[in-house]
Length: 239
Image (cartoon, rainbow, N blue to C red; front, side):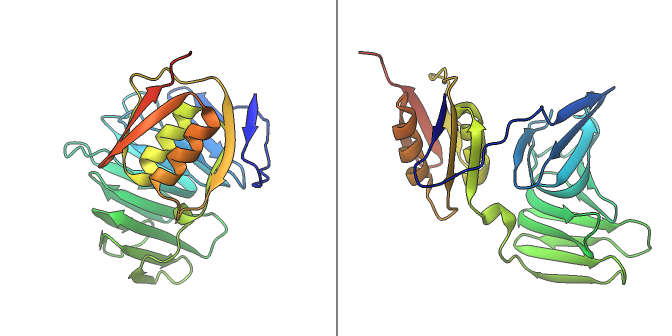
């Protein structure tokens, strides 16, 4: 069954799986108006925005952590000092060891951007002799494609701060998204989960307590306990 949170009014779309594998390359695409959470083979997480696509090696990714991106995505990279992580776009290359950052590089846009939420990244510019730029957390780099000029500013309103939307997804996927969005750990080892699919929307001002209270009430299959940065899920025993 499909559950809708009253008063939200969500558009549900049925369609084929948007993840394809060609040889050892895995490609993921997201249509406009949707988002997709992808966990890479090294454990890094990518939140791919609408009208965006990415590709990465299905085999040997842990040794060569490289993602090709067209569009926009927010990355939460697992730290590995021996194997740097790189995001390659048409105009910008971003190299990190482990951090959280956003890359926006739409093909028809006049500029490309890198916004750093945590840690530090090195940004290189494809096709010219500009020196690489190291970003510190809380800053955003804008690269104008035509002129080659770059500008630095504080991070403003970003797409990952807009409402948190779930469209026909399982509890397990919801928990994974919440871990990434709220930078928490959700311990669900004692909870087998449910096959029901859920659809609802939360404003990003909602706290993890707000979100868990609604999901628990809507599901009716679990209780939870929040202590520090950990949420523990427990199944509701049948009477």
